[in-house]
Image (cartoon, rainbow, N blue to C red; front, side):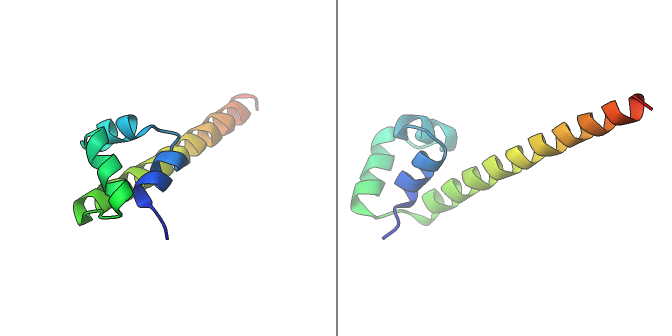
Length: 77
């Protein structure tokens, strides 16, 4: 069975404390939800949005790198 809190923390390389700070939950609340498997819809949505935000930031960084490469190429012509 999937543990969304644990999986999210691991995927983002965050401690429960850091993860909680990122989404407005205490470390103890995340530990309790993780250990009991009782994850509220609000917590679930917060974690999903945090993961989506991370994904979009990575895509934006890739786009900015591509943009810089294209600018260099155009300026070298």
